[in-house]
Length: 71
View 1 (spheres, rainbow, N blue to C red):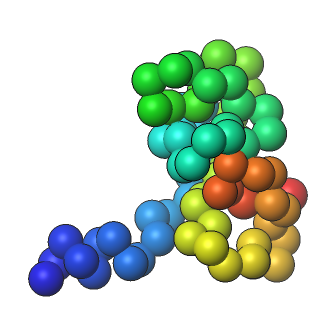
View 2: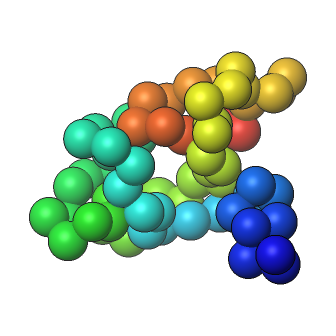
């Protein structure tokens, strides 16, 4: 039951250089590492969170790949 609750509750957003690839595309600013992850190659750190199929909250923008990035 706890694992189901963790899946439904989105993780807290924090600056990330590597994110899990959701679907076929990486978010804007990230490069597909061909291992299921997307990376900024250490150049930038973006605060991102998964969209989970919902619109991005206020103050965030959709960057594709199933992610929102803080403006």
